[in-house]
Figure (cartoon, rainbow, N blue to C red):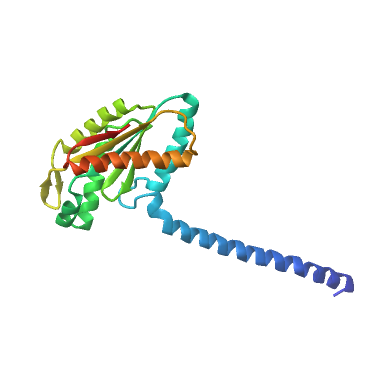
Length: 210
């Protein structure tokens, strides 16, 4: 091999090594990211109903609040609870409990507008984001959703189950000094407080936190 070519290869070795190391580190970083995303998946999407979870719902609400500020319209939330879910879950078992939630999702989705967002807040709770809706419109929809959920029993695991929903409603006018993520979290907390208040009075009710 000519001396000049040997010298050229020697000069290239550090660069090639650096590229190989960078590629290995990038691959490791990619694998770590994939692992984190798998671990975070329940926060982003419910694996049984396919609905978005808390993290995505709060991100979507923050974006909607930004749009509401620009267009000067209200935003409302509904927090819906499957009444007596713990008993129903024990009665049905895990697979049929998932089927119960999926059947309710299909019923509720049939009454929502195309731009409304239905998500899974917890195993027994749904959150509904209602763009361009004030509290009055949200209350009307909450009653409609409660009626469609209870309109006929659900046939699951060889049983006909009567299901009811409780609802908490919270609305927000445009503007505010908090950061968008903080306002989104505060809104969700308001809807949940309204729901907890109505649950204290018994199932199948609605409450509002202005």
